[in-house]
Length: 99
Image (cartoon, rainbow, N blue to C red):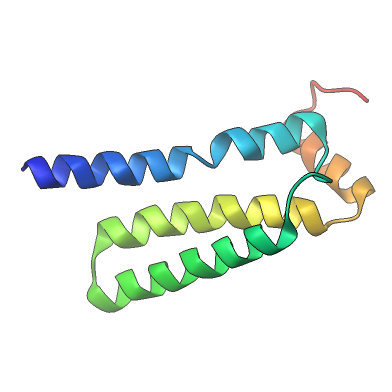
């Protein structure tokens, strides 16, 4: 039971750790300080971990890594998009911020 709790907390922490960066990108509309290669490698890693989880039929591994993949891919997408598209996406997600 203790191991399950530790694993669940680790998965939760991993998933939550991406939210502040994603939210900052939405709020500031800035990605110039982010490393595209880091987010690309992270996205690939989470994709591979998700496939690994599917192969093992381990739902906790699948869910945690799929959520992290979505968040890391979102940040990567925002980094790679032209600035006007970054603003369009961010405005759709948080219209309260005006430039």
